[in-house]
Image (cartoon, rainbow, N blue to C red):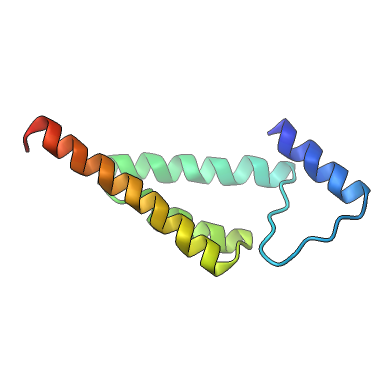
Length: 93
């Protein structure tokens, strides 16, 4: 968290121009977004829904470019489904 906030402050100090889809990792964003992702992961584990279903729209709300959000969400769903498939194979279900 501290690294991201310090990097954000350095960018602001030198007048860095953000492009469409860049995330401004200020102290608010570095607290809120990981908390929401942790809750999404908890509910994904408890109820069997993929975390990518929650994190995809969250990334859009953060201002991430829609193509990047879609690709990242698909990647998260890939790992979730791979892990579920592996557990079924290992435990013989």
